[in-house]
Amino acid sequence: MSLHKCETPASDIAAEALQSPNSGSIQIVNFGCRLNIYEGEVIKKQAQEAGLKSAIIFNSCAVTSEAERQVRQAIRRARKENPDVKIIVTGCSAQTHPDMYNTMQEVDKVLGNQEKLEKSSYMFGIGESEKVQVNDIMSVKETASHMVMSFDGRARAFVQVQNGCDHRCTFCIIPFGRGNSRSVPMGDVVKEVRGLVEAGFKEVVLTGVDISDYGKDLPSSPTLGQMTRRLLALVPELPRLRLSSIDAVEVDDDLYELLANEPRLMPHMHISLQAGDDMILKRMKRRHSRSDIVEFCKKVRKLRPDVVFGADIIAGFPTETDEMFANTLALVDEVQLTYLHVFPYSARSGTPAAKMPQVAKEIRKQRAAQLREAGQRQLAAFLQSQVGKTVQVIVENGNDGRTEHFAAVTLDTPQMAGTMVQSVVTHADEHKLYGSVIQ
Image 1: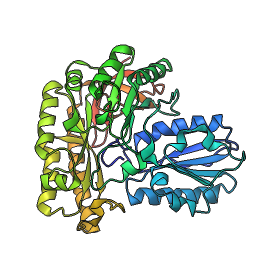
Image 2: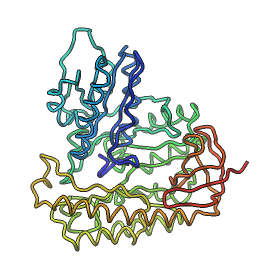
Image 3: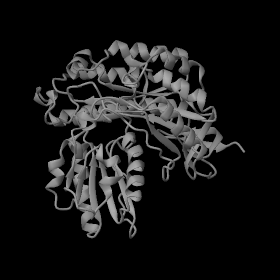
Image 4: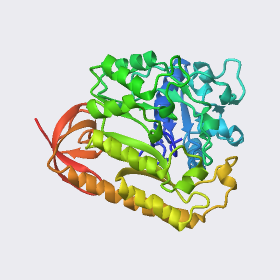
């Protein structure tokens, strides 16, 4: 998912820290994207209401083979350290490769992406069910809103507005893990965000598999921009709203207008880019061209001069020549991509790209490193440009927080997590800002 739709954590495909659960407790280990973080809270709520105790639930990612390897490794370690707990595996990897986990002796139950959100899936010992519960995800037609009123240890809340994907990029297996595109009705989104604000959250992130496709399956076909405009109008007390990864060519006029006139919509756009060469984009079956991205960035900067851009990029896609890679590398500087999620191409069985002529793994790694270096230079330059400015910081933990532009900042005095403070940026290094809190 993270490869072409949802934003990933800074550690790319890394799991949350795995700790031994307290006796009788439930631990959720989320891999991959922000949608999994949101769904992890739903899973925890459903499992608790089902009466499940002493369990570790792995919410897996299938975006790369490395992601799946990390899941299996974590499961084995968890079983060795916790021989008596129940181990449940769910998420995209469980949906697409249930047999892989069924054969693992360490695993007690395998749940699909639909089943993981249902309370009945976590009822052990009542007419003991099959070990594997994974349905045909393509048969799912709706995405329900799940009211999540707490995000343990997190300053911002994620709200799922959409799930699934109707597009078939040649490298991606995620539609087979998430199903076709399904949107949460606008009224349900507003209700959930309002509840989160009442619970004290100052920032909400709208997330999904392909949020740019929001609304096409709903009555009257509202767009992402229309839904966002309504949300901000109906929840005026929400201080900050952020979008996860978008397809630039799908941005509608309402969203452009909000970028120009609504300061509560954060000036941070994460683009589902993947490559900066037209031939590679065509072989990926992407919807945009290189020039589309250049024009999009120019248009948004004209509307919101302080905006920063992030992007997902795949290094070493099949058939990528040195010249094609150079086009992608040059785009990082041309449009000033500040936050990069870079992935060496990973072949997924059953996808068209896996049958194309492959680039050597060592070359993929080298190209990924070059892209990360270019992104780091852009990040360092942006951070230096912030020195001396006053920024609004949402505090994540003690002295650490994030600005409107999603820049990491360390404050000179600790603050309560979840609060927002004004800070003057005193200096910066290559990775983050340092600020003095304005009392």
